[in-house]
Structures are given as structure tokens and as C-alpha cells.
Length: 464
RNA sequence: UCCCCUGUAGCUCAGUCGGUAGAGCAAGCGGCUGUUAACCGCUGGGUCGUAGGUUCGAGUCCUACCGGGGGAGCCA
Image (cartoon, rainbow, N blue to C red; front, side):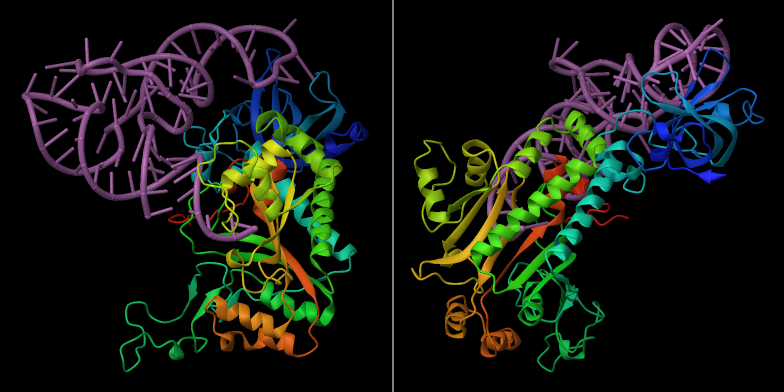
């Protein structure tokens, strides 16, 4: 007998088939006529399949009547047209095998809405909810689009290291990786911790970005992308930050900033288009239950050109806006969240790409413009989430790169291999980083980043 | 890390001026000719986050700590 997913069994084409379905009970309703309706879910789609469990089943009184949310079952039966309005098909069970019970007195997920905050405390059970199921299916679709997009664009998937021995990536606080005994680490004669005796013979950390290593491969193989876990030890407590998250970082030789911005726009449009086409049921759920603006926001991303503005133009618009901002609008200062929000949510109500930022507020590797005041950086900002992509054209000129490193107090010796890329066959190149979870947030409308990753890691929280 | 809010039944919450704990949902039992957040009735369910303090008396007031949330900064 064929195994059918709930997704397949719900299609009218499945009518007439005798099949096996396996999954978890969501609810049981007992009918007046002496039989029961079971809602079975197996994660293949948001919806459940309705199972008709007749009283004639051998275990009807002993087991079926006691099924409750969370119980796992195998159902063998016939797919038939449903008499009810809510679904096209239903399964008339010939046999129901109970694999595991879920004591309703103690099982937390009863047939009732739970807050997302409470569900975080049950991260081992929350994938069984409609919301987390939908989030994970959309997250999966996004990940697939990421690979599809870059592969079709001719980018090579490169695995940059998770452990890095250079503390010079410059993108924020890092988690140390060590095998030294924290209670009694090896010491130098002077009393300092002796990392020469540590596993790697020097201090090591979890990566905060694969960019610098990505540049190594881009300047040999042309177009590459990385996609993997990334770690930031910042004490950030917001709905948009995680200590462990997934980042996509394309890097392309012979790309300038224009190419980079165009790539970012095509990339986001592709993801959004794929989700709208392939996840209509889940997206309808988000629209109805999570955020009733999310479908409009996605369609506008898919259909409309992104607004491109230089940093200087953005400052002018903000200064002329008449808005009362908590932080002053001033050329040379970084834009505050409230400024970005004004641009994306009020002024344009669409994604905005800002570029050519002041050199003093951006990283050393971003290419200096001829005005010598700005660098070829770009951020893609979207409504509600804010910065979703940060990127730049990289500085390929050795002398200027050295100048920028000195200006920011960095020791060129620590970057000898990065500088070699400019010493030997240097090329213009550019790239960006996309935070996967922020993209999932934007696409689903979920307000908190902790609800779009299976097991969120945040300061003080690494349960599960 | 800073500011603000919050912690009462399995879940969501109410609890007045400080006076001895309440509802809805869920659960258990019973009823109901195909139900769809099923419906109706009954029943059980509490160390009020933790530790101190004020008071004759604290869920309620004060202090500290812990957890959760929102905002800010950092960034993806």
C-alpha cells in the first residue's frame, strides 16, 4: 500500500486511492453518530487531513476515543471526497495504529493558541505548531532559492572556515575556541595565558564572517558564495540579533558596486518570487495570523525597482523630512534605526539601497571613492527588519588599503595573506552578506528573529 | 550593556483601598444523527518567579536577584 503525505492526500487527485498516512494527531472531534474525526498532520503542509475513524474499528473504544493532540499514528484507509466544506478529501480509516501517546494532562501543546514567547520555552515541541511548521517550510524554500540563484548565476559554493585564528575580521566580538583548561590555563613566564600551548598554537575564534576567505577564492575562481553559520558574541538583546545565525556571502571578481547592488536586488527578488509561487498556503497563514501587510510587502519587492540613494542624498532627504528624530541627522554619522525606518517605511515604503558611506564609519576593506570622503559601501534596508544586506566593493589598491588599515589602527602584518591578494594579480571585486534569519523574518512577517530559527542562541540562552 | 514593561491554574489573563484566590480556554467525566477554534452540563486543578523587608495581616507596598517582552546601541 502506498504511503501518502498529508499534502498528497489532500489533493483531489488522490481520491480513490488506498493509502497509508503517518503523522501526529492535532485534534479529535467525536461525532454524534458514534464515530470520530481525527485531524492528522505530518509537516508536509500546513493543513491537516481529516480522518474518519468509525466505531467499527477494533481499537475504537480502547484507543481511538482516547487520541489527543500529539499522539503519533499510522492510518491505513481510503481517500474519499469529503462531505465537509473545509477540505476536498478525507481518509476513511480501515486501521489505526497508535505509535505513541501524548498524555493530555502533561503535554503542553493542547488545542489552543500559545504565545510565541511561551513556545520558545518548548523549542523541542514548537515545530509541531502551525506557525513554526510554516516558518520552517518557508525557511527551507528560501535556502533552496539561495543555492538555485547563485548556482544559476555561475557562482561556486565555497566552504569558508567556521574556526578562524585571525581575530582581525573586524565585524564584532568573537567567541573564543580553546582546549585550555579554564580553571588552570597554561601560563607564560610573565603570567599571561599562553595560547602558544592552545590547540591551534594561537588564539582561535568562531567566525564572524567568511568574507576575507571568500575574497581569496573569488580572486581565483571568479564568482563564489558562502552559506553557513556565523557567530557574534555581542551582548545584543533585540528582535533582530542572534549570537549564532546563518549568513550568505557572495563575492565576485570584476564586480563593481553597481554590479553588486544589481546582484543583491536580483537575489532578493528571486527569493521572494520563489516563496510567493511555491508557498502560497504558508504565506496565506502569515498574512492572516501574523502580519496582514506581509503579502503586499513581498509583492512590492518582487515587482518594483529598489530605491537607490547615496548616503549623502539620504541625509538630505532626512534633513528635509520635517520629522522629529531622537538622534540628529548629520553628514558623517551613521544612520540610526529611526532614520532607516523613515526611509523604508514612510518615505518609500519599499526596499532602499543606500551607498557611498563616509569612510570614517565603514570597514577598512571598502573601496575609497575619488572624493576620498566616501567608500563604496552599500546597505539594503527593508521595511520592519531594517538592514538585511550589507556589502561593498573591496579596496583592490594595495597602497590605499594600507592607508585605510593604518587609519583604523590595524596591523598589516596580521593581514599578510589578505594583502597578498592585492600584491599579486589584484582585481576589482565586490560582495555582500545577507542574514538568512532576517530574510526569513521579512518574508514571513515574524516579529522576533528567535522564532525563525530552530534553536535560537542569544545572551544567556542556549537551551536545547 | 542602558531605559521601560512584565512574572497569579497546563495556557491566556482578572484580582479594587493591603483583609485569606477568580474567569475563559485546555484537561477528566457525561450528553449530543458529519464535525471544522465543534457544542451543552458537571468535576478536578494554585508554595501568586525567588529571597528578604514593612505590617496585626502582602498576590497587592519596598529592596535585591532570576526569567520573559518592548525599545536603544552593535550589526546580518
